[in-house]
Length: 85
Length: 424
Image 1 (spheres, rainbow over the protein chains, first blue to last red):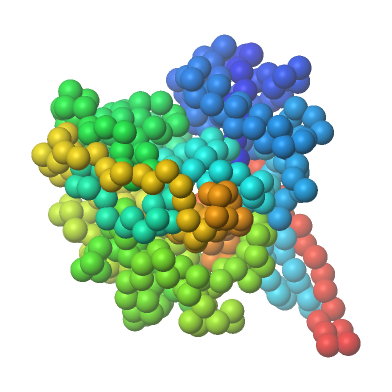
Image 2: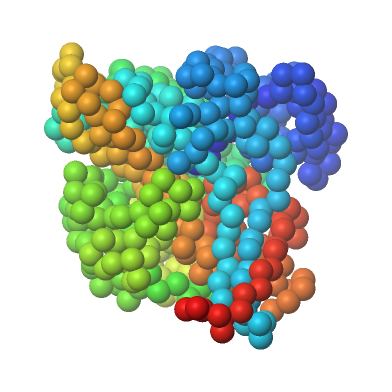
């Protein structure tokens, strides 16, 4: 299924395929911003497979985190590793 | 069924992976797209209060939240036998759905038609805001109806954008219809939602299936009949290889999405109908089909905005305090095609079994067919270009599907098998 996770933009390098980085917890990962030309540093975006696919407002970020946290409450081994029995 | 989801696997860049199986002579036996990067969350829903499921799924599977929101609401309502909404609830939900269809299709246009994408994205957002959902996650639907009628001021704002949006969608359609179309020899059925006259209806209540030559296989079935219509050959798998039960596993393959939507029956809005006629008489193709469906969605929204029930009327039916032990099925025909939510519940209103069948999962057999055609009799850069085109055509719900030509992060693995050993 088309899972996506909210991450925060730390930097963007402009260009035909704008690239940059996002923060996910303490981890910084590379991200392509081609589909969200309106995105700015500090924004939260939904990320899937190395691409930012949507800029999120703070409410949506909280809702998305809550949904994943809800699964974490089912007894998961780390904050961002989800599992079921 | 999945045992765990690692968020790094969701966000980290990963190439689209295609596996080509060849025999010892080099002939292609099969080609497939690896869907393991799109795990199903069905098993994670077991035991939860069923009324919470639509909200949870739309926030996890957040690329198409409105489609999950609406299919989930319909599945809940199916549990208690509600199949008819009030006119206001039906109109507001339909507005949300049509706006959502445009907003998803726009992602694929941002790099190829940026000016049109901007106009259409604003229009889609305005439509969804008028339907009560200004943010990414919809709040339009409530079990039994909608939270409120459309806001008249938001409706008027959206109406002011119709002409520009329609012109933008027409320009995209014109460009797409003159572009080359990948070879497509798919012989399976087309499946989409229709109204009671057999016309395409992206928010319809009836499922229609037609064969490759246009013969109706399922004239119009209701969601409650779902278990008699489609079977997953590999239940719960990311690529479950579903098939039409009446035709059997060997010949029941089908596809969903814009190509199926245009082949299923007449489009009822005038500009899109003219484009559909040209499309059906020509080479077809998914990119132009997506554009024509967008034209249709803009026209359908324009008509909805003039409906008095959109902004005034009863918002829904009363919702019971407790839910029965039952099976409920809800669906919508989204940007990528049919999305189905099926909830089987216990007598205390919790999920016994949930099944979420996405368009990407349903289109995997079609994509495999396109890939096989692309890799047969080709090699090197030619094969790579063909594989990219095939992926773009079937449009799995991954960002790579929207990458411009030549830029798709793609990994093609070849597996050799000795067919002489078959049956040993």
